[in-house]
Image (cartoon, rainbow, N blue to C red):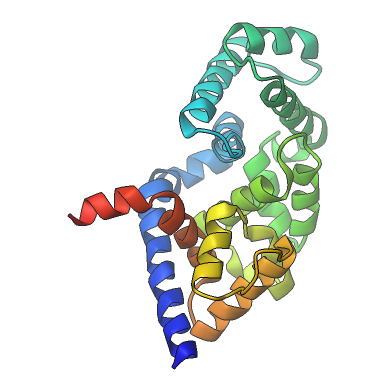
Length: 241
């Protein structure tokens, strides 16, 4: 009986993942070809994931908007003046040095390592996933200052969902597509996918994937749905009133 309740709740959370796709990924799905073929749009796509790092959304959005405006004005290319761009970011309101360093390291990656992919981070990501090298993409992103496991996984999860790349991933590679934040962990605890607070991130990912496979639902949508249930609970409640 208890196992049946867990399965029911997993399926319910996965349905909220479909709500997440409709609410947060619909425009990116509609523009996926543009993002794939336009390095500027691809850069914005990445930043729309990695600027959200555990602070108030309005702060992240303010710094991200200022970053977009600065880059559009400065138009950095290969061998751009790193110090000058840093100062322009700062002068345009990106006063968080962690964000500025992250932006510069992302640009360094795009301009110094991705020339064969038209300096397009999304084209690079999709190409490597199809070649069975998602680990390489994850490691590149994980090495960038302030991105780390959670934000790299968030970006990769949404890429896989938007471009429907599940078939190119081995079972163990889905670990790179599961961002684990407070909300996802708390939902996993609440519905007893995990049963203790002090569980390693990799073990939470593994438990979610295994439980979703047992319930015959998409573990990627479950992951997105768990975030929706936790972080957006007030909005979801109001919509139902």
